[in-house]
Length: 413
Image (cartoon, one colour):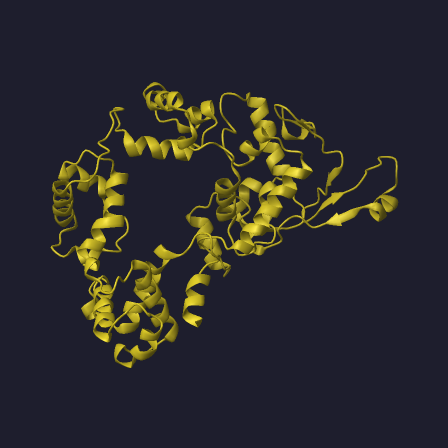
């Protein structure tokens, strides 16, 4: 069976998706598909800049048909999306972005962007009358498992291409990569159960299934309509490669001592303050050296949420100063844009922190924050602030807020 012979009616397990009322313009709308070497997988797909809805009458002539059509632009016409119209990007694609001077925004989606993405998703699902099974497959869950025959999988791939699902999802988000858009949709719109929502009996089953099937998380998750990511994270957090459970109790002072000692050896330093914001720390190596019977995820979390702040001596912050206050201080100093630490107007700064009783307390807190920057003694004030803004501030952004809005309100008051 070739793509051209596949019928336009796509059948899911419960719903017939009738595409008679959705006509595709099969002329290519953009030559990026043919000129870009990075988009070779899509060069043979029918592309279009519009999807045209109408009560199509096969006996009417073209002129009357054009007059009666309600034309609505549903596909992204962003150069970024036309150049790289698929979700998986490689190093060549990233170089292509630089060569074409294309702006790509990364990080958390704003409330406005999420509203656009939600509207695009709902519109697509409405147009194709998607049932829950099809929505799950559109988001990349269980799409190519054993429950579907090879012809069904091929038909679904053809449907994904011909409906231009990814370009429809990306409409109105010109500076977000297809990769970011698709994986945000996967997280936001899937209705799969998390591991915490499974029954106790199912959890017992889940604990033994990796020993039967191996770590084929999608196959195991499909059995329970569970999110594969939630399942895999749960298993590797609480079970070792032999299926034996890790210790889950409260951390002991001896474990903390051995963990910090192992970190000093692996990172080859006596001053762990230099690694408060270090990424890609080899936690597995550190855990094995410390002989701690916990997963590397739990070990990493212990360092990230507790021990690094103990090392930074933030337990000595004065006047009930919180980590959030530290982030607010960094944001204010960044926004005031002082050229040097000696130029800081601490009177203005202190007015924003009513809980601070004295200048000495405020300055002590600032010194403790500053010392978490690697080799801070040899850095300029601007370098210190830039580092803290990039590394400390993001940890305290409210995921339900629109970017830095909370910090902007604090600064403006």
